[in-house]
Length: 376
Ligand SMILES: CC(=O)N[C@@H](CCC[C@H](N)C(=O)O)C(=O)O
Image (cartoon, rainbow, N blue to C red; front, top):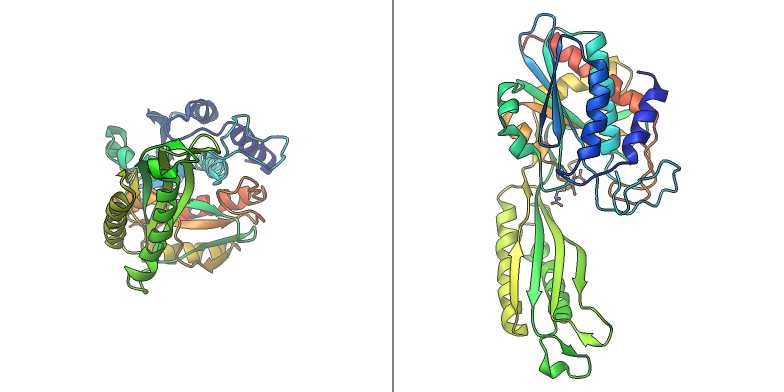
């Protein structure tokens, strides 16, 4: 596929970002593009808002999986592009428009130039939340077409175009979402002694949880506790009866997440006593770490160098990815694709360079070809 076609697909998808399991327009658009490519060697199945496409190989000995995520984020775009999101408060701010375009480009290449093995292209919903990978793995269609090895990419704003990066072993962290609801007693701003102020309780809670990483975890076990959203109250001269915090926990060790949760619960109990309020904690969705199989990373490094794509050894990141659940079950790897944006992932001004689309397709197709010529 030409860069102009890839760019058009990316821009079309960029305009219709949808949240997890609501990717109806995205699914329709993808199905239309996929159906244009269908031959007798291609079988298409849907699962919820996701799609799986199987391309039969010339002489298959195994099935190779390639996964893309398809959902957007609840972010109000501020790029100023003439192809900005048409969905207010929704944006492809994590590059899933790139990921889907690269998957479509690679799918077309594999249909036009068949490889030995079967390939399953997996268009997975709800990566940003509540998590589509785990239920998808448990689905009938995934079980029927279960790949023997699997890989995926993620755009990397910090790397230039022409660069790919990954590492053997741990690449991304274990994650848990965090939603905390405070219930106290509201009242007139001038009579605080007659109320239980939940804005102050939530503020105190936020301050106290900063100590979890520095005082409850081994300094060698990296972790993050971030509150990304705080809501409380209705008006400037009334004391807030409720507050809600929304955040995320990240740890490099799966077991460390339990330590963090226990500390959060203990701090919540203390706040309940000291502020005479009720606190409810919900951990939302939890993702398993992304752990790359060394054998596949070595092969990836070799074939990228042979294809004149710059390979860099990546550092671990505290990002999360539900692709980790697929890698827990199926050997494979994930890699970063350089897209050179001055604004990072989850930023309302994320601006990945579209030249990276071709590099993405080239790297995916090269990996598929080399895995297919490799008997294991
Ligand atoms: C690559 C990336 O940015 N992934 C997301 C995954 C979100 C998981 C979940 N909603 C959470 O916040 O814990 C990330 O934020 O790392």
